[in-house]
Length: 194
Image (cartoon, rainbow, N blue to C red; front, side, top):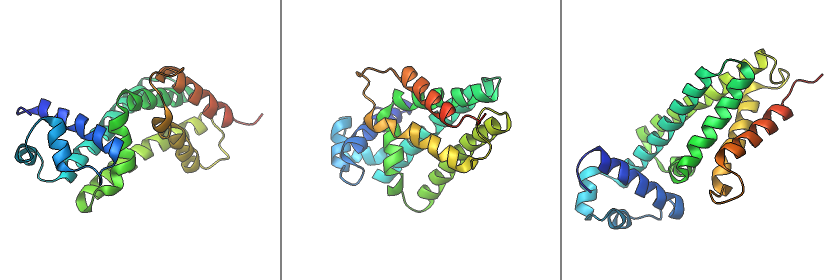
């Protein structure tokens, strides 16, 4: 590991792959150091604890998805298109680096104290962004208004997030095609009753 931002990004990529494959608890710092091609001492030069690497991975995941979705939603002109933009951006960002986002989703609970509180607050802020888009879609008539927006946003997040566990990049669907399918399923299923 050479010094600088590139080293930290590489550590995040390698750490996310190992944590996604083996789990945070089962991955040792010795394995992380070996995968990075450095000594344990060098690893500890960059991260005081293994948890600091997990914190970095969780923050990177949430930063990427929040920035991508926020920009996509802001650029969409109608309530329905904002939901479509949210879905497309979330799916494509998440599937561009499955290990990073899978680690955040599954290993967040391994953080402790202030680390857990900080990442949970960032995740909750993203959840609010999704709920605001759903509420906007309800107000704009693109989604049923008789359903609780919190429940709808949680259902949408479940549709989006669980794809990370079964999506195969070599499979029949591209991330864009998968996003289109999810958008159709969600928007048609939650369409206002006529």
